[in-house]
Image 1 (cartoon, one colour):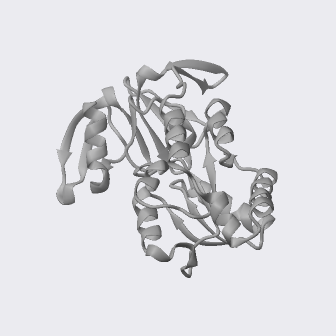
Image 2: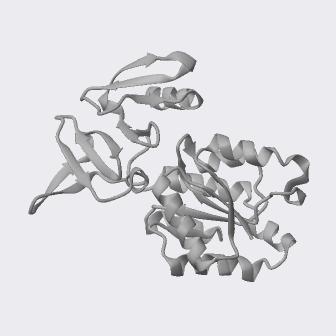
Image 3: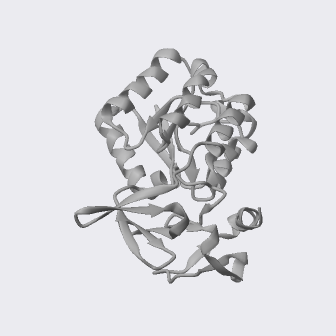
Length: 266
């Protein structure tokens, strides 16, 4: 069984690849993508041949938040004719929509048992190539429902930040940016106070209101109220300067400049 992984967190990619090798040795990971753009380009290359084309995957593991936007935007451009297992950091509230629409999912951090269950479900209900295609088909109504759930879910108003022997309440409105420092997630406030949170960036972003926070790239999440100024760089990239210092420059890729501008001016 050929599989592709669509995920922008390198640690998550490594973990899923390892789990597949340990629990499902007959599953071969043939490609890995980090963005909506890369995924659309990959599936577009098969053209009208679809699943009949050599190299078409039998199963797709897809994260919801990718480096250049929500994974659901992939379906605006291409159809994926094989089963899709969403890998997500969303809580139970958001996952209700996945159950209702019969779309399988794996809640991060992914366990061996959950991975085996999801793959066995695919094998059981879709033993033939034709069945696999039918099982993986997502209708426009299903995608719209999932999008609505993601965009209208309940978001955090506070975090409890560990600080020595205490838990410090941190209002979301005090956050300037969140970034990945090597393998450590740090939250920095408008007063330039830094905290360490033992959660992956993807999981934190899933808990934040996307109208107020923007996933600038794989390393940074920035708050709307923390943006100081915006500079246009060569190749149409954007350099975002925040009201507090950042360890590295916050760059928006050319592919996402329109999305950022729409977010900031909404």
